[in-house]
Amino acid sequence: MDAVSLLQLASTFLLNASFAWLLGAWCARRWMRADGASRRDFEPALRRLDRMAAGLGVVSGAVGLLAATAIMGDVGLREACPMFWQMLTGTDYGRAGCVTIAAMVALLVLRWTGRTGLSRRTGDVGVLLALGLFALTRASMGHAGEEGYWSVALAAEAIHYAAIGVWLGVVLLSAWFSLDDARCSAGEIGAQDTYLCRMSHAAMAAVMAIVVTGVYSAWRRVGTPDHLLHTGYGAILLAKMALVLAAIALGGYNKVIGLPAASRSHRGLVRVRAVLRLESVVLLATLLAASILVSLQPPAAQ
Image 1 (cartoon, rainbow, N blue to C red):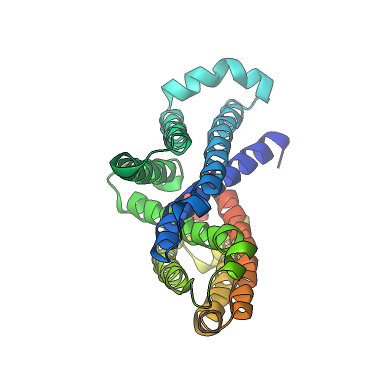
Image 2 (cartoon, helix red, strand yellow):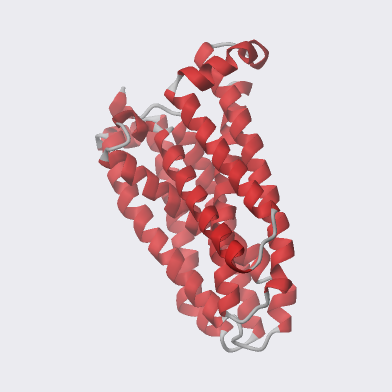
């Protein structure tokens, strides 16, 4: 893999991670309020992190499109610059990429402006719509988009992409923000029960959607067991599946053992956070594998 391909891979990974953070933050806000947390306690810090994620998404999206231009033209990044505008306006991939960047810009603007009351609720709806537009358009830029916007393949890919975002996003937010030291130690025992319960339900629903859509997409793209075992695409897909199973095991531990312990003691809550942090690392590795798969030609299409 050359430097331009590595740049595209890194841009794809960071863009997907930014989307996951913003989606997880949208959920976490509601769950923290349901636990009785005041917006003043978390909103300023979370808004700053959201702006960073959206800004990273804008930059990653633009860099990824420039790298794609170089790959399409089989040239270096410098030589690709004069071709960049033509790629953006003259190809379906470029136009879809512009939509994803516009969605990230909208998310950046919405998280930059602090609103209250009705305007805040309207802004939250706008954030959710921008996230949905991003997920659908981003899915269309992959292999599923070759069958058109009104295909089952694209619908499955969009659901799969959004479900990955929900799972990774809520785990990231819970592990590294919502259950930080201050919140774990300041509240009463069981104060985070509502948050943890809703997080667990959301993660479980996301996992179910990922498994169903993932099996469907893998069957269409791999074609035969021989392709799964004897191609680079199949090897990375198997690695991704192993990582998903590891993350499911960690989530299952928390659901069966960790969450009941968290409702009984602060020590149990800290243990849940530690498992979530490990799960977040595994899910980021899964996201990296998924980003690699997007850049490879599926065996069934060869």
